[in-house]
Image (cartoon, rainbow, N blue to C red; front, side, top):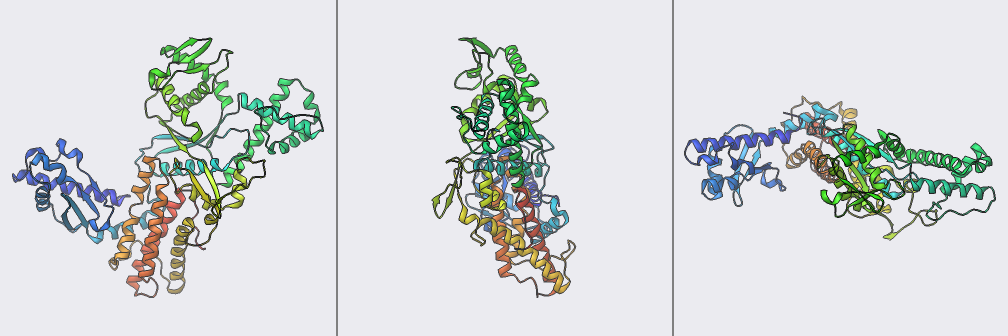
Length: 566
């Protein structure tokens, strides 16, 4: 059995169907157009039914082949069923509905699956679907002009979990934070810092229009005054603003790194905009676009013919005053990703950037990059709720709640799990009361408690009876419906991970974890583990250990801990 028992069994079912169809064609019961390998088979699927009463797998083969056979689907289903190769692997096959074939596999299949989990340990759930493809996930990328907020925390949870899931699915993943450390916003940051420094010295000064009034700059102003003294304010304007900008950016980025590390997020690369500019990438983009006939001059500005490649209008790349636009620099940054050898670039942006998606896709197409290379996931806003009412925790003049303040209120595991329970493109009401609740009503507590319970059973079994799960144990005593349902769901982990990776939806794993935890609690209530005869106790302990392993792996892919005691 391979590392994905469900995929292996699905393939076995499909091969049995193809064998049955070939036999039926040879017997003259189906026409040659229905033979395996013909166009008709492109639409044949073997899927896991939503309702376990419909079997382990269901196929639409009879429905798809009915047209070629010029017979009713139920008749074709009967023909296929008659010619299916038998064997100990198959318990029964039944035709259902308009012509589906439902396959019920023998119990030894899922029993061997439990053994495969124990054998693989922490590697169970990993697949090679990605084929080693090199993927970059860029996320958070907040402007280094102020502290991270709650919405940045949501993006951090999503990006980190997505990277983990992609890695488990066989991709080579690198995580990147893009630092917009150049341009007008950084100049305004420097001017705002200067105002705070002068205020600290008792001089009259105001935050410039469009500047940054947050109180966090007061601490940075004090640190800079302590480091360089008031003499810095007497230096020439450009010199002092450059120094202030660098100092402020370094201080804010250091705070960002601290908060993200506290949240369990580390980046492989912090890529600054200054590096993009210093390496001449904006100029390289312009030259490449000129060679492709994709730019023109109008009203003293340089424009991209983006309307020719899918955008709703053309975009300015260089303003009349010669300044590069945000669009041009962002195109240049993404060209670095292409030239660094990433086979796929996935960006996670806030919803306020949704209007930038199509222009960027058009611009990269204008550069000659392949469609589909660049993907964007958008995250919606987060609203904090306590007692059913919206809350603000910030002491910073009504600004958004900072990530630091948020993490002072909520456990990291709860924060990450709650952010990942919903698709990122939906608004999230984050219930602080529920996140801090230590009971089964709290979704993350419910799952973590299942893991802790499994660990407790294993500890008790070893302490009291010297029993320890072993992959070589006889699993024949397993057969109760609660055991079967739990084991069957455990085997879905590799497929769930692959599906979450392909759809870029790590939140799917929260649904899976809830299912496994629920089935495990039901199993624990129905099937006594300790105190049973040794063969039964050993087999059930193996199932408990497999459950522990799957819960730990899936939680780990979300960046959530799996406590052994609670």
